[in-house]
Amino acid sequence: MSLSVFEQGDAERMLVCADTLPSKTSEIRYLSEFLRLGPKRLIETSDLLRLVIRQGDEFIPVVVNDGSESLCYLVSPEVHYVRYMQEELAKIRKSPSAIALSIAVGAMGRVASPLGFNRFVSVNNWLLTTSQSIRWTRDGLGELTAYLARRFIDFPVVFRGVDLRRAEARPMFEAAGCDLVIHRPVLESNASSVRASRDRKRLFRGDQRLLEQSRFELRIDADLEPGEERAIARLYRQLYLEKHSRFNVRYTPEFFRRVLDVGLERLVTARLNGELVGFITTRNDGDRLICALVGYDVRLSQREFPIYRTMMAAALRMALAEQKICFLSTGNATFKRQRGGMEWFEYEAVYQRHLRPHRRLPWWMFRKAFDRAKNRVDTGQI
Image (tube, rainbow, N blue to C red; front, side, top):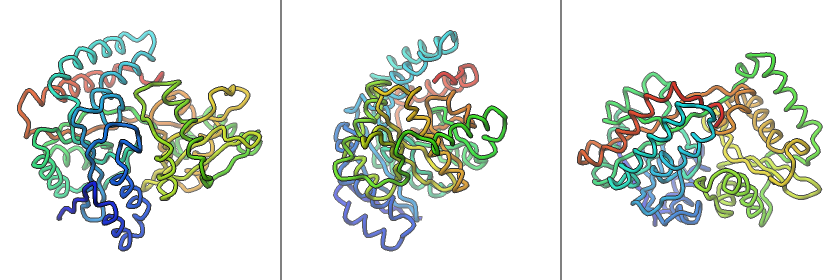
């Protein structure tokens, strides 16, 4: 299997691939914009190096943080594994295990930072909170890893979105020389998990009634009107950045315009008296429907105007109608578990055998710490 590499100036050349792969058209169009605009214009980071590697029919985006970006968890290990992690652990009240892990994370961060922990090659990083799935093969993974390790000789190569529930996944990544590091707890729901208990079915039916009796004007598969990307970005930022954490992804209006115009994501909107007050984006990914981003006017009472609950109900209905798993990502775990969300750990696979021993230490420390803590920390409050 051979690799085709698309650099930052190859956005137009990449679009040609859509002519022979119509099933990948929306992904190819988005990745062309990813090359052309880059993280700086899509998620307000430093102007990081990016490329896309084609391997067979798979298109794999790569982002390289040279250490210059240290605010966005999506492209900064230091933020994700230390600063954002400590914020999340602080939400788990009255938990000695969470407190101990937070202290350990802070100490490891102080050791890791001067060793270049924030410098890495992030593979399968679409600048989306949940990456598209890649059908890895043992030979293909080995070839890609070898290429990236040669090209970026002083950077660990880190694969996002690794699901170890597939029997072949762990031995395949380990055969490629990768260490497997817990990245985040995620949740997903399907029809059987919703039906698993009376309480879940009751909540699900109540949520679905919201769609029929809603005080909002709901639009499924809504078109993004001219200029409306600014309203979408504002609602997103109110929730993710202003209410929750400055370390969340700083998606721009241009990101929302591009990701919806190319057809990679679908949009559901809620309007009140004609004004846009809430949205959710969803994305098809094989046998799952990803709940991508949600936003709402945080000034409105959620008891009186349950926008978040309504948006999630719309996404769950779409997934069940299409007989797909509804991938609920992370956060608001109690709400999602009550609606059939089943938790599992998503991993990152780290290749660093080409690095000197002291450069390998940060990832080794975090892998050991999270493996030890994963069954001791209750993530239900996150």
